[in-house]
Length: 580
Image 1: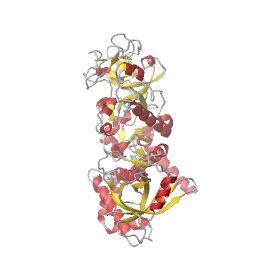
Image 2 (image 1 turned 180 degrees about the vertical axis):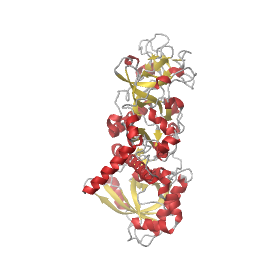
Image 3 (image 1 turned 180 degrees about the horizontal axis):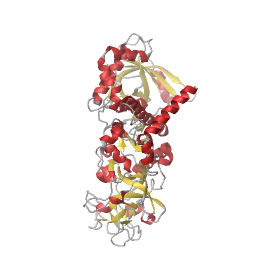
Image 4 (image 1 turned 30 degrees about the vertical axis):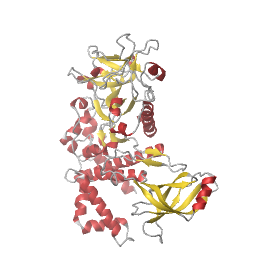
């Protein structure tokens, strides 16, 4: 044990000696200094003299565009570069400011598929913040803006400051009108029951309504916006809610490419200018290959660098899996639409002499796309995927097909239980083969007591059944006594032309498959080894493993043997792909 301790000390001394220059060269603090290319302003004008406040980073100069730095856009949200600033405007930490984007939401495909209202959108917005707050704790701050309307602000280039957007007639601050009674009295759609939003002068005696940057004709009673101020200088023009999240500039595969030595591309110069100095090394191939500030083993051989890269990539995937598990437990529903864009990576500032790549934290930014539906009187949760779900390599199969047809049903037995609920034992026969898995659900509409009864159950194929027959034990549910007696009288009779639906049940395994594909993307995929080929090879390899006769042999030994038997597996699935 003592000899192992001495070896560890030698390794530690070697690492520290190799990084001695880095320790001496690095400053104690490395805060971003955007003053040369940008400036910071508070999100609220009254916070200009606050000791610490949340703010925005704005581009200096008059290029004719918006001074606000838009990082990216998602359905229903615009994401801007923000910061935590002190009284002098010094950036203490970068952050993301998420702004409700109702025009973008209204134009999305999601809005064509379901009825979205301001009430449901606000609830969804707050729910996302609450879940991420539960997962990340203090990394996701509470501002009070997550569930409240925040007044628009306008940037004044001459004074390099922000003020609240004011009504042209009275000079009073404009705010989002959420009072349904005021809106209805003015002949406008109610806030809660529609997706229409209007700014107003907050004067109930003489209300004036405005709408900024609308591509649609203005409703009667709504004033057009004057030429000044320029809409490009207005932040949060809809007056909706804001959320503050950690600055996470990298998609997870993009960050994995950095670990493999691929420079950071696609970042705009004005963003780079606002970032800490060590971010500059991410766009320089030489720094990625040899820079002391990024890797622990930057001065060691390729085998040590490969080991470190593999460890860092596995850490990314471990965090991604943990985020999905935690959010699924909180939400009590799956995501059903996870992919490479569902995760972002936050890179915390490293301490003196410590490598930056060891400070990565994964953030799950995607929302659940699952739609919870009720299955009659049963207790089983069921989730529908989004109708707009297009085929993707991150899905185990293409968009699920819901089969609807008729079948012949025989009631074998009516099974009441002590809790007052009843299940049915059925034999179910179709004209065509039913491609159902044991986890899928069959929805049957049985004739009963002059009406109908919806029942749900999982298909089973025990031995002894005829071709195209399956057995179904329905989920227990509350059934009226008269209906129960009617079902008992129908026991043994063939009920023909019974309508049914096959409902593929999509739950957490659907997300696990997406995480497995993400793992293949991070660990094995590269330009010369594209993801579709990697997935095809993995599925082929899994099928070959499953078809082997030597099942008693440990899985690890079987994998090693197959790799030795055929060189193709090593080419596409081998460890050399970790550093590609």
